Length: 167
Image (cartoon, rainbow, N blue to C red; front, top):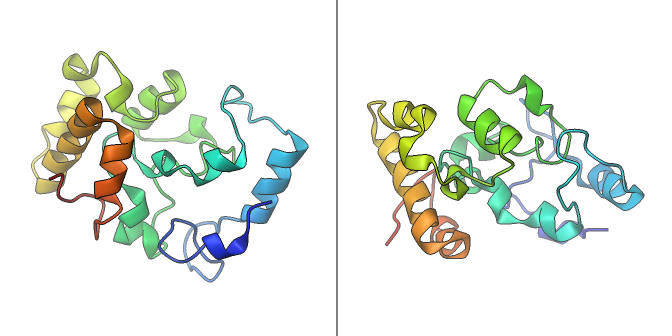
């Protein structure tokens, strides 16, 4: 069973005192993992304790990083993929086209894993939105594609929001 000292605020797990959204109950999740219950949608994922703490699960398919996102940390968002990967949330009810294509249909961590990224209409339309964050999300996906997840996470864990510097 996972130890509770690793679950400090800012690590990505919401305390039960949050007003909005469903709190993440790590103890119940650990029991499900230990009992071998399979998620109907993602039954091919490895659900050991290392996976639950894996920071890749905090990277949105589009390149947003939930682990440092203030909206997520303040409890106003459930996270891009969090809960869908463990069965706490139903991926078939997801409204995000990117998440459905990337995570449900292709079982990728992010769109950086897709060979069709540059020609994908969903991603072209998403990154064409006006706004600084879309440019930063695109940079994040391109950085992951070029440098890998571990280099991305070393930088992203220092951010103060869902995006930041990739230098």
